[in-house]
Image (tube, rainbow, N blue to C red; front, top):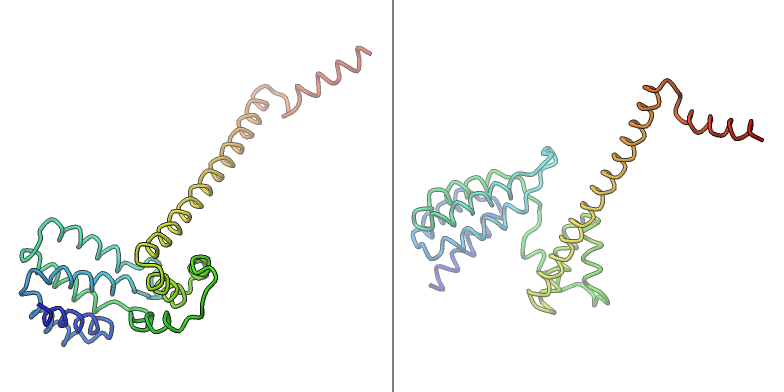
Length: 210
Protein backbone atom coordinates (compact mmCIF):
# COMPACT_ATOMS: atom_id res chain seq x y z
CA UNK A 1 0.00 0.00 0.00
CA UNK A 2 2.86 2.37 0.89
CA UNK A 3 4.42 1.80 -2.55
CA UNK A 4 1.17 2.61 -4.34
CA UNK A 5 0.71 5.77 -2.24
CA UNK A 6 4.19 6.82 -3.34
CA UNK A 7 3.01 6.40 -6.94
CA UNK A 8 0.18 8.84 -6.17
CA UNK A 9 2.79 11.33 -4.92
CA UNK A 10 4.70 10.90 -8.18
CA UNK A 11 1.45 11.39 -10.09
CA UNK A 12 0.87 14.67 -8.21
CA UNK A 13 4.33 15.89 -9.20
CA UNK A 14 3.64 15.03 -12.85
CA UNK A 15 0.38 17.00 -12.68
CA UNK A 16 2.25 20.02 -11.35
CA UNK A 17 4.95 19.78 -14.02
CA UNK A 18 2.49 19.15 -16.87
CA UNK A 19 4.08 15.88 -18.04
CA UNK A 20 0.87 14.41 -19.38
CA UNK A 21 2.27 11.31 -21.14
CA UNK A 22 4.04 10.03 -18.02
CA UNK A 23 1.17 11.23 -15.86
CA UNK A 24 -1.49 9.32 -17.78
CA UNK A 25 0.62 6.15 -17.88
CA UNK A 26 0.96 6.34 -14.10
CA UNK A 27 -2.75 7.14 -13.77
CA UNK A 28 -3.65 3.96 -15.66
CA UNK A 29 -1.54 1.95 -13.22
CA UNK A 30 -2.75 3.59 -10.00
CA UNK A 31 -6.44 3.79 -10.92
CA UNK A 32 -6.64 -0.02 -11.06
CA UNK A 33 -6.79 0.16 -7.25
CA UNK A 34 -10.18 1.71 -6.28
CA UNK A 35 -8.79 2.50 -2.82
CA UNK A 36 -6.31 4.97 -4.36
CA UNK A 37 -8.71 6.68 -6.76
CA UNK A 38 -9.82 9.13 -4.06
CA UNK A 39 -6.18 10.17 -3.54
CA UNK A 40 -5.83 10.71 -7.29
CA UNK A 41 -8.99 12.82 -7.26
CA UNK A 42 -7.60 14.93 -4.39
CA UNK A 43 -4.44 15.55 -6.42
CA UNK A 44 -6.47 16.61 -9.46
CA UNK A 45 -8.62 18.96 -7.38
CA UNK A 46 -5.57 20.62 -5.83
CA UNK A 47 -3.88 20.95 -9.21
CA UNK A 48 -6.93 22.40 -10.97
CA UNK A 49 -7.55 24.90 -8.17
CA UNK A 50 -4.20 26.40 -9.17
CA UNK A 51 -5.48 27.42 -12.61
CA UNK A 52 -4.29 30.83 -13.77
CA UNK A 53 -5.12 32.03 -17.28
CA UNK A 54 -5.13 35.80 -18.01
CA UNK A 55 -7.20 35.20 -21.17
CA UNK A 56 -10.14 33.90 -19.10
CA UNK A 57 -12.61 36.19 -17.36
CA UNK A 58 -13.69 33.35 -15.05
CA UNK A 59 -11.34 30.38 -14.49
CA UNK A 60 -13.32 27.17 -14.99
CA UNK A 61 -10.89 24.57 -13.65
CA UNK A 62 -12.12 24.29 -10.08
CA UNK A 63 -15.90 24.55 -10.77
CA UNK A 64 -15.64 21.87 -13.46
CA UNK A 65 -13.59 19.62 -11.21
CA UNK A 66 -16.00 20.09 -8.29
CA UNK A 67 -18.90 19.14 -10.55
CA UNK A 68 -17.06 15.95 -11.51
CA UNK A 69 -16.27 15.27 -7.87
CA UNK A 70 -19.98 15.48 -7.06
CA UNK A 71 -20.75 12.91 -9.73
CA UNK A 72 -17.92 10.67 -8.55
CA UNK A 73 -19.32 10.81 -5.02
CA UNK A 74 -22.46 9.18 -6.43
CA UNK A 75 -20.85 6.65 -8.77
CA UNK A 76 -17.90 5.69 -6.58
CA UNK A 77 -15.00 3.58 -7.84
CA UNK A 78 -14.25 1.63 -9.98
CA UNK A 79 -17.38 2.80 -11.84
CA UNK A 80 -16.14 6.39 -11.83
CA UNK A 81 -12.65 5.71 -13.21
CA UNK A 82 -13.53 6.82 -16.80
CA UNK A 83 -14.76 10.19 -15.51
CA UNK A 84 -11.71 10.51 -13.27
CA UNK A 85 -9.51 9.81 -16.31
CA UNK A 86 -11.30 12.53 -18.29
CA UNK A 87 -10.85 15.07 -15.47
CA UNK A 88 -7.16 14.14 -15.27
CA UNK A 89 -6.70 14.73 -19.00
CA UNK A 90 -8.60 18.00 -18.62
CA UNK A 91 -6.21 19.00 -15.82
CA UNK A 92 -3.21 18.70 -18.11
CA UNK A 93 -4.88 21.11 -20.57
CA UNK A 94 -5.15 23.95 -18.01
CA UNK A 95 -2.72 26.81 -17.62
CA UNK A 96 -1.61 26.99 -13.99
CA UNK A 97 0.43 29.19 -11.71
CA UNK A 98 4.12 28.42 -11.50
CA UNK A 99 3.68 27.44 -7.88
CA UNK A 100 4.00 23.96 -6.43
CA UNK A 101 3.19 22.52 -3.03
CA UNK A 102 6.91 22.10 -2.37
CA UNK A 103 7.49 25.78 -3.17
CA UNK A 104 4.90 26.69 -0.55
CA UNK A 105 6.43 24.35 2.04
CA UNK A 106 9.92 25.81 1.50
CA UNK A 107 8.65 29.38 1.75
CA UNK A 108 6.66 28.52 4.89
CA UNK A 109 9.76 27.16 6.60
CA UNK A 110 11.78 30.28 5.76
CA UNK A 111 9.16 32.78 6.98
CA UNK A 112 10.27 34.86 9.97
CA UNK A 113 8.30 34.67 13.19
CA UNK A 114 4.97 36.45 12.71
CA UNK A 115 3.32 38.33 15.59
CA UNK A 116 -0.12 37.79 14.06
CA UNK A 117 0.02 35.23 11.23
CA UNK A 118 -3.75 35.32 10.68
CA UNK A 119 -3.69 39.09 10.08
CA UNK A 120 -0.74 38.60 7.70
CA UNK A 121 -2.72 35.91 5.89
CA UNK A 122 -5.74 38.19 5.44
CA UNK A 123 -3.55 41.04 4.12
CA UNK A 124 -1.94 38.69 1.59
CA UNK A 125 -5.31 37.31 0.47
CA UNK A 126 -6.76 40.80 -0.01
CA UNK A 127 -3.68 41.79 -2.02
CA UNK A 128 -4.06 38.68 -4.20
CA UNK A 129 -0.55 37.48 -3.30
CA UNK A 130 -0.93 33.73 -3.80
CA UNK A 131 2.65 32.86 -2.87
CA UNK A 132 2.68 34.70 0.45
CA UNK A 133 -0.86 33.68 1.46
CA UNK A 134 -0.10 30.03 0.69
CA UNK A 135 3.14 30.16 2.68
CA UNK A 136 1.53 31.87 5.68
CA UNK A 137 -1.38 29.41 5.62
CA UNK A 138 1.08 26.50 5.55
CA UNK A 139 3.01 28.09 8.42
CA UNK A 140 -0.19 28.38 10.49
CA UNK A 141 -0.89 24.69 9.79
CA UNK A 142 2.67 23.74 10.81
CA UNK A 143 2.66 25.82 14.02
CA UNK A 144 -0.96 25.54 15.16
CA UNK A 145 -2.37 22.56 13.27
CA UNK A 146 -4.56 22.12 10.22
CA UNK A 147 -7.82 22.95 12.08
CA UNK A 148 -6.45 26.40 12.95
CA UNK A 149 -5.47 27.02 9.32
CA UNK A 150 -8.89 25.86 8.10
CA UNK A 151 -10.61 28.11 10.66
CA UNK A 152 -8.60 31.13 9.46
CA UNK A 153 -9.59 30.53 5.83
CA UNK A 154 -13.24 29.95 6.77
CA UNK A 155 -13.36 33.22 8.75
CA UNK A 156 -11.90 35.12 5.79
CA UNK A 157 -14.39 33.55 3.37
CA UNK A 158 -17.37 34.32 5.62
CA UNK A 159 -16.14 37.90 6.10
CA UNK A 160 -15.91 38.24 2.33
CA UNK A 161 -19.49 37.02 1.98
CA UNK A 162 -20.55 39.47 4.68
CA UNK A 163 -19.02 42.36 2.72
CA UNK A 164 -20.86 41.19 -0.38
CA UNK A 165 -24.15 41.10 1.54
CA UNK A 166 -23.58 44.57 2.97
CA UNK A 167 -22.87 45.96 -0.49
CA UNK A 168 -26.06 44.35 -1.79
CA UNK A 169 -28.13 45.89 1.03
CA UNK A 170 -26.62 49.33 0.45
CA UNK A 171 -27.28 49.08 -3.29
CA UNK A 172 -30.87 48.04 -2.58
CA UNK A 173 -31.37 50.97 -0.19
CA UNK A 174 -30.04 53.43 -2.76
CA UNK A 175 -32.40 51.96 -5.35
CA UNK A 176 -35.38 52.35 -3.00
CA UNK A 177 -34.51 56.00 -2.38
CA UNK A 178 -34.25 56.68 -6.12
CA UNK A 179 -37.59 54.96 -6.72
CA UNK A 180 -39.27 56.97 -3.95
CA UNK A 181 -37.98 60.23 -5.42
CA UNK A 182 -39.16 59.24 -8.90
CA UNK A 183 -42.62 58.32 -7.57
CA UNK A 184 -42.92 61.67 -5.77
CA UNK A 185 -41.96 63.56 -8.92
CA UNK A 186 -44.47 61.57 -10.99
CA UNK A 187 -47.29 62.30 -8.51
CA UNK A 188 -46.42 65.98 -8.54
CA UNK A 189 -46.40 66.07 -12.35
CA UNK A 190 -49.72 64.22 -12.52
CA UNK A 191 -51.28 66.85 -10.21
CA UNK A 192 -50.17 69.69 -12.45
CA UNK A 193 -47.84 71.16 -9.88
CA UNK A 194 -44.07 71.02 -9.71
CA UNK A 195 -42.42 68.92 -7.04
CA UNK A 196 -42.55 70.85 -3.82
CA UNK A 197 -45.48 72.97 -5.11
CA UNK A 198 -47.79 71.98 -2.26
CA UNK A 199 -45.23 73.06 0.30
CA UNK A 200 -44.73 76.34 -1.53
CA UNK A 201 -48.51 76.99 -1.51
CA UNK A 202 -48.70 76.33 2.22
CA UNK A 203 -45.87 78.78 2.84
CA UNK A 204 -47.60 81.37 0.62
CA UNK A 205 -50.91 81.04 2.49
CA UNK A 206 -49.13 81.44 5.79
CA UNK A 207 -47.54 84.69 4.67
CA UNK A 208 -50.86 86.12 3.39
CA UNK A 209 -52.54 85.30 6.68
CA UNK A 210 -50.07 87.50 8.49
